[in-house]
Image (cartoon, rainbow, N blue to C red):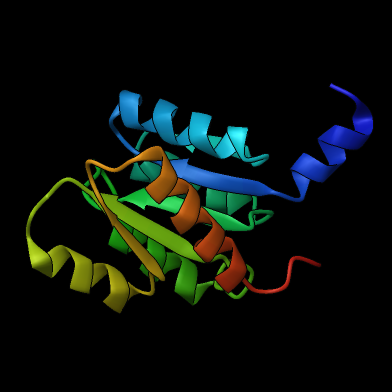
Length: 138
């Protein structure tokens, strides 16, 4: 990859956490096709560790139900950290419980995507998510 392409991708980094490897690969492929650089996490604990060390994301996408730390718990943590609270979060789930979407929004998520989803839905939601983000400069 050319250095200039790498630097523009660095400013378009998103954190994606899902304990389903197929969903993680799918979201990663869709986001990368749209020019985002994806940092994947296999569960909530891994996402939490990444956020502890790195806040250089323009958006985050979390599964609601994950082992160790759930998506809403991650969002609540992010809202308590000044360096993370500007990162907009999309939550996604295959669960049919309406309480999960209200819990996600209550925690601070800005977009909610039910599974299964289409590529176009992910692309539209990701654009909405990024447009709702805080300023991208440090």
